[in-house]
Length: 249
Length: 185
Image 1 (tube, helix red, strand yellow):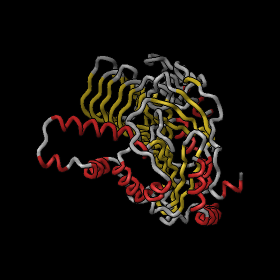
Image 2 (cartoon, chains in turn yellow, orange):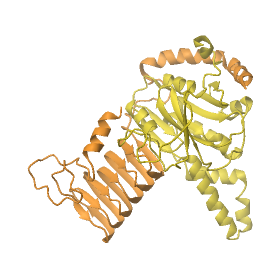
Image 3 (tube, helix red, strand yellow):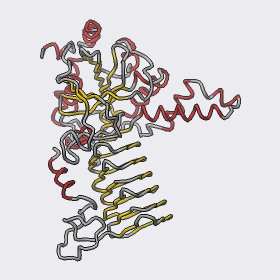
Image 4 (cartoon, chains in turn brown, red):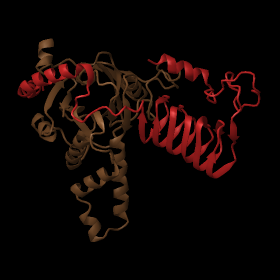
């Protein structure tokens, strides 16, 4: 398997390691004391959690090892475990739930549409214009600000034009030599998932209510085109049809 | 990895005891009577509304409404469970137990309790977010990195060379990677 890993051919290594179980309802139910639990945005009690081995994460960390004080941008919600994991390793972590921002942006635009639009407004409502507007209001970071990016369930859920513009923008804010770990679905996802880093090779997958519906399933070729400015791409596909892809700029 | 922080959290029950380092001072009358704290924080209690700027050097417990700016650079600001704060807060430590909206900058730590509803941008060195807390916005946590990276990835430290070698190997197998994953589907 080590040899296959090196070739980027590792497959089937991501079967959920433990059985699915419901999250406890009570405060800090996971471990019973403050701060010890993975925490973050308010969660529905019916959320399901599973853990899975993540070779993508392992590889991601390997590439960041020895970096010293690095900077990481996690485009998902702020989870205590993920934040602590990277902060302990000397990272300055920025967590920004981009999908939620996109959903809010869409809702705002929809509300604006109901108010009556001028011809000029209509011209600014093309996917292209909306994508540019959204990016001008979000992800405002200087070029080469980050050493690493985490894109969990994100690109599949964004409008394809926005995804394209966003990857281009992310490429700018990532330093040369920087690493991106992105998760794609190989088949249409039934639900929506959030991810928390548990340790160097394990992520916890939390099933939750979708913020926005899945927009597009990317094939390998499309992923390569999307990240065309990156030097290296490496994918791992698990039995759960999650494709973890690592890119190096 | 959690133990230190857990210990701190458990030792600072209601109002952070971060500044209570001088035993012997009058410790009575604290809002929630934290056993470890010997310092009484200033208090904006429930029913009090402040609009404007609050500055000072003492700890502050807010359980009322504050709309504006709170700057207590060397102290702790606690947003109580009944509080509604819409402010820019800059403090050494910020503890949120109620509703808070704005920009929060702590030179040390931000604690978001399970009862907190936070919207805004958080910036700190360390953060603890309790399960059940609602947090919407951007979080920036961790030590500010020193200006080392030269922009070419050369500052990746001791493993940089190894990374480059590995990267080269990955480049060689880029096509194979695509084929393999497609097959796995």
